Image 1: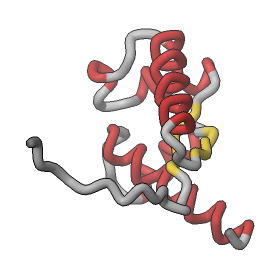
Image 2: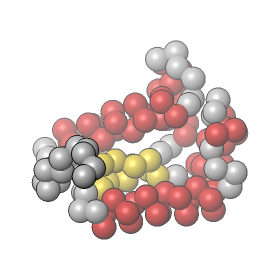
Image 3: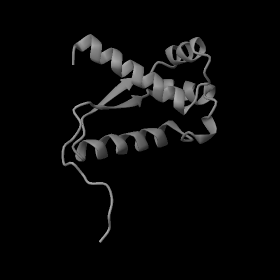
Length: 107
């Protein structure tokens, strides 16, 4: 018998937050990201991957929210923290934006 983590059967109340990009913002990001070589090659590839992740999370019962990313704002955020525009920084940026949204809406 395989042993692994026990599943609690209970989903978290806190939504999973995904970064969301318009075509223009994604294309700008692909030009300025320090890890652009690890990103999808095209907006269409990113859109398909992101859409699949979104649907899979919803189908699995997780609450999901998206945050539209303004790359100029992301660049300012990274510069103010002396961070490269990479996946780790984008994740931290989105987490901060999600926390701000939660505080604003009292959720």
